Length: 171
Image (tube, rainbow, N blue to C red):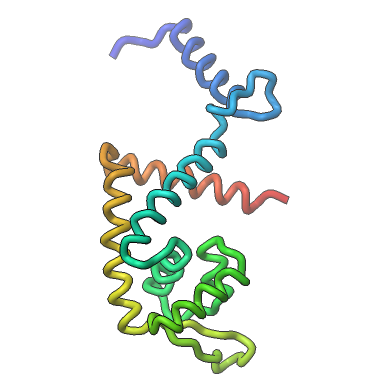
């Protein structure tokens, strides 16, 4: 492999530094299109629209999808645990859980160790609903990541976890 020239290293460094400066709102060279949170927000918004449209076809919505997927991974969970995991306000998640209960997809019970906590348990009907919503979500996922390799997805997830960790450590 030929050695990299100092001018090539300088150009690469300038591009990388320029990108960092364009993505920093405190920089005079800031450009919204280079701001990672702008891109993440646009992706999340587009995903929410596409998922909402796809879920509507089977009588579901995005908060229901989130709650069912969280409960599918571990049930029972408290309403507040589900709300935190789903990044939804507790009052909204309480309404979602009550709707799921009326539909027979979950049942509610008081936690035996602390009667102040309402636990949510997924029912067999809820598990059947999970299968339907996973099919729908899978189609949206396949479209979004059609040209991504498994390594690309691992890298993306790793970077997003780092950002989340950095934000969580902020004062």
